[in-house]
Image (cartoon, helix red, strand yellow):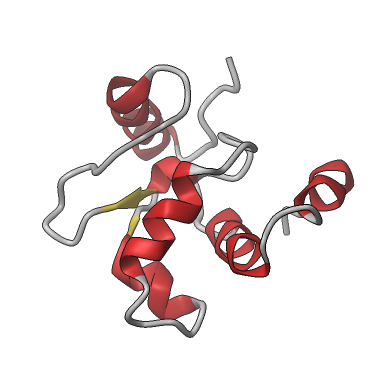
Amino acid sequence: MKKIPKDIIKKMSKYPDFYKKVWIACFDIPAGKTITYKQLAEKIGSPKAARAIGTALAKNPFAPIIPCHRVIRSDGKLGGYSARGGIKKKLKMITYEKETGTDAPLD
């Protein structure tokens, strides 16, 4: 089972507990799979926090190691992606992972 690198866990300590909870749960989404903001909110025990999930993911400084690109809107649309490359990069990463079943390259 994959583990979050220790240096990232250490860096997470300066962020709010809610963000850490979101990022840790997001890390567990397998390559090639996506979940919705709502599903992630439910997964962490905050079923009404889908918007807050989006905020936490938008502030994720550890992408793509913490794979926030795997979280999409309930209507199936991609939603946002604040990391370098924006929404086009998110689509490219999701497509790569669905085709290969492996993590997208960290380029």
